[in-house]
Amino acid sequence: MAGLACYVGVILGVPTIGISKDVLCGEFEVPEKVGEVKPLIYGEKTTGYLLLSRKGCRPIVVAPGAQDLG
Image 1 (cartoon, rainbow, N blue to C red):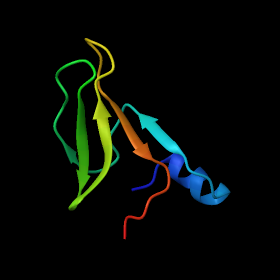
Image 2: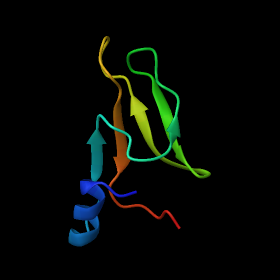
Image 3: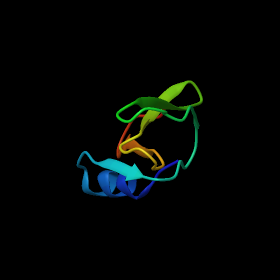
C-alpha cells in the first residue's frame, strides 16, 4: 500500500505527498470535470484523492506520504 513518497516520508520522518497517474490500491470513481476531486477508498478509509487537472487527461492520484492506516 505504500508508494515511494510514503517510504521516503517514513525513512526521513517528514511529511510527504505522493502524486501518481496510477492507483496502487483502493476503489474510486473517476472525476469527470476539470478541478473535480473524488476520494480514493481502501477498506473503510479515505487514503487519497483523484484530481482531474486538465481536460482530456487521466486523473492524478494525490495521497499523503505518511499516514496512520492502522
